[in-house]
Image 1 (tube, rainbow, N blue to C red):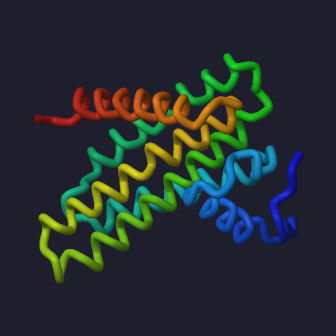
Image 2 (cartoon, helix red, strand yellow; image 1 turned 90 degrees about the vertical axis):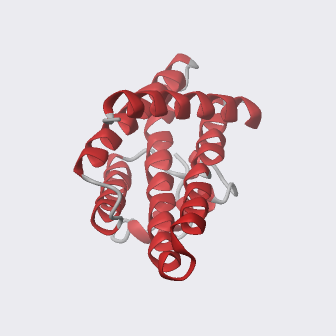
Image 3 (cartoon, rainbow, N blue to C red; image 1 turned 45 degrees about the horizontal axis):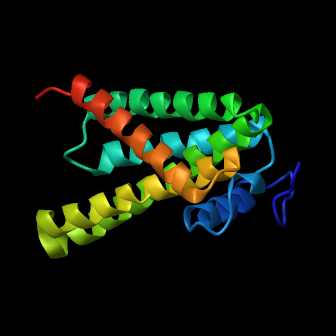
Length: 178
């Protein structure tokens, strides 16, 4: 088990957040996160908090989008977990999922901050484009995470992340009203 830098069991959130920022910026991978159900629960809570923040602050996002987002996230988690287990790295599932959920939460929070701050000054078009670019950053981040978890080249991870993104888009399209 690899310890988080400056990790103190009484304060697991701040070192986890620092590590998640480093992963989101592609500086490190899920191997920097210890295999811990508590850290996974913290990342899951952060992801839920970010999703609820989007729900409460983004007018175009409603409860149905929130529920569909839960299903698409679950689909991604299942696919990534299955790939890590199939590659023979079952011990890496928990840190990998912690990284994916935690980094996804940070990206969602960045999306919300950008949306709320830019909308009054730049309007919906520019704000929407920048917001979509922020959300698309999740693809290389997830590709980076899964590539490191599988011990594969970064490009393999990107292909996998694009496949998961397409799967999630198909699920979202099938569940969302026209």
